[in-house]
Image 1 (cartoon, rainbow, N blue to C red):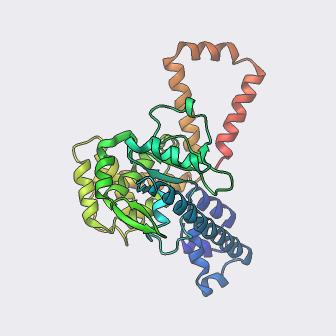
Image 2 (cartoon, rainbow, N blue to C red):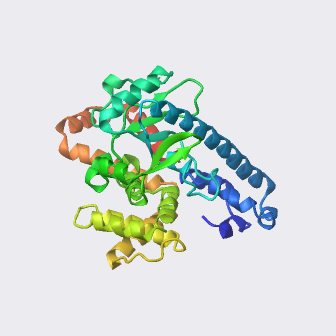
Image 3 (tube, one colour):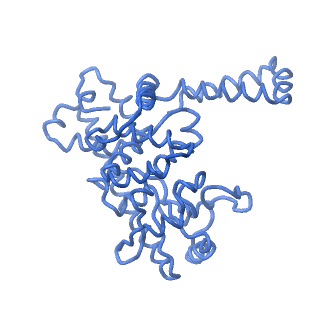
Length: 342
């Protein structure tokens, strides 16, 4: 996605907007209409759409900041200084030039594992409650069940680890020790060091089930990675930490992707030929399959084939139902959903 593509008279602006939405970068496109000359060259309805999305996202982020301040205030009362994660960091740290650029869904916080119950008890005492059944929640899930309160803009997800799938890449205790204390409108919150923020962004692409299976990535995450990579010392520390682990290549490829797409921010990374080729393959696949349709179908086919190869019950189920009209219709409906979802 680029300004040049937007100005092409033959550009499919509806498809462009849909693609920007999939990558969670639509509010950033408001920078295009901030330039009067550029805005004049864009269709007025498209400019109004970008303006609306940016305005509403800015308003939502302001509301989220107020909610975050309220949460921090309650936790501070019991001597907990929550470590902000993911989008919650962006409400405070000023990484984005415009706070309305960053789209976010919920508020992620980290609390020391031995204070989790205290944090939950304090928040439930002021009206928050689990939005999903805590008893059936997976024991080793990366965060507690979401906490919500009527009238609030977002749910809270409380973590005890930064990258729960691979704690050695970013140990929570060390991340807390390296974090810096920040004043949030009279409350105390903590922001992770850059060397601990980077594994979170990379880990999201590596361990998120949907992204991993489909081979897709979020441009928003790559852009944030590039912004954080301006801290070259932190990048060096992360590479040293990952060296010798089975995640070393994943880390280098993800950093290489940021360098490839945003060279103004990451121009110093040394990558091997195979890593550069993998980066090229990732970007080429995004261009070819920008909505992820083919990758979703390939993932589904691999999943079904794997079950049939390893499960006798799955083979018997298929054999006994393949001639059923209802079974075939349900299969066709699922394929249509995979093809049409964005």
